[in-house]
Image (cartoon, rainbow, N blue to C red; front, top):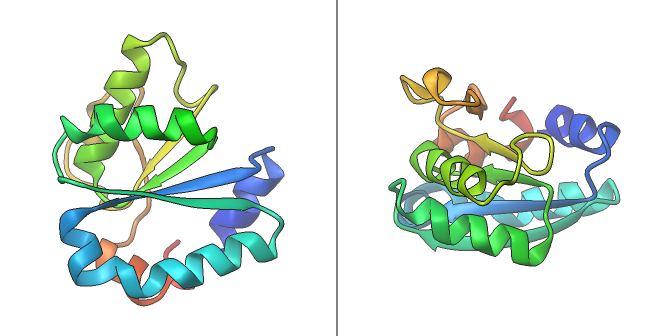
Length: 137
């Protein structure tokens, strides 16, 4: 996780949103969210928690609106389905991904590379994100 946070900071991001979903939050992510927030703030990055949202692309529209409201520039999204919905919603609003807002999925689901733009994903399961956020990437 430190590597990801360092990269986000080096590329000019100042406030990270973690977009949780109902499944991951209940089973895996909740214990690691505080550690992720602490790691982000220790590097001088703002942090906010959005959700939980249902793990489907339709929830991405609501999550995208929330991310824009809190003015986060990268969104780390527990569900790649929500992330794909966010990308679609942002594009419909004329917001460029990743130039204006970066969306990073956490599941690396099959087919995410075929989205336009291709979804950036972490190569770890969401279980690992919750259990050991510092080892996610």
